[in-house]
Image (tube, rainbow, N blue to C red; front, side, top):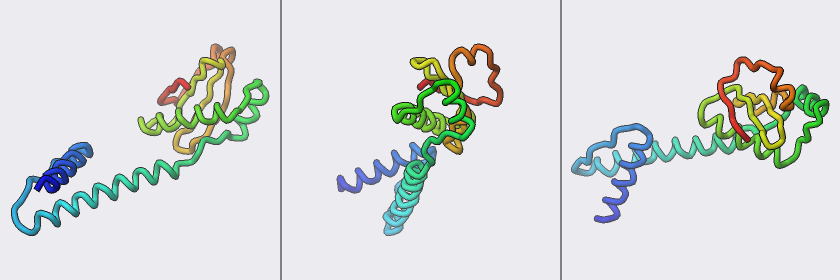
Length: 142
């Protein structure tokens, strides 16, 4: 009995977290099948979302961004790439598409296209003071 209560409780919690109303318990043989199909559908959605997150493209620099980074003395290190990827992941979760990623510690910033996981350009803090950024729907601090 306690296993059944635990499973019902977990299914109800998962449905509520997805913004769905939990089905009211019913009597009879259809109950197990209904709950099992609800759980199966919810599990499949979660697995699909996790798989999509894992297959999301890794951050890459456009040719323009690589040229600008070189011209401006911005070193592209594995640590920087990890920090940029973390910023892209956070912005993707919020639904942003074009973001400025500020790296205050290194006095530099990057314009990012979130759907493509691409760095569009790289700029230094001195250039930021003279620039106007348009079509940006988010900002992230690295």
